[in-house]
Image (cartoon, rainbow, N blue to C red; front, side, top):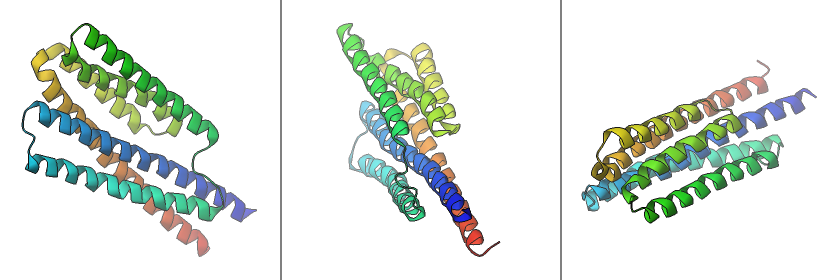
Length: 207
């Protein structure tokens, strides 16, 4: 019975860490994309800047993917099955579908009114808003912070910056928030994984 309880707790820990690793993976990928867009809008895209973007993305995405893989193995070893429950997967899919639907509507609308320069700012706000339900879903409060920062940044850009600066400065600010969140989330996930590993080793030795 005790082993069964420990297996369940181990599975829950692996699931939580897996969620953070997945978040870091998405933040790294989309943060790098926003960085590319910002540098491109500033007409500073060249082999050196492209290499820097790829390096930043790889430095965050590779360890996040490795951690995700190791947590999948840990969950399998504990006998708890897949990391994500069907309900969690459905909720995650719904939230992301709503996000992409809102982005598509924004693209159509702002293209129709010939205000394409506002698109990046609006998309930043939408991405920030969609992190609120994900924070509740994954029980990870840092998503609230990232979402709040993105929505605040989008509001500042729309109010305080001229339209011609939105595609460049706006994108770079969004990139900074997402990449910073990737670093924090990956660090947090790695720390939790190491802590869980030590706890399991102690339990295995009867400590």
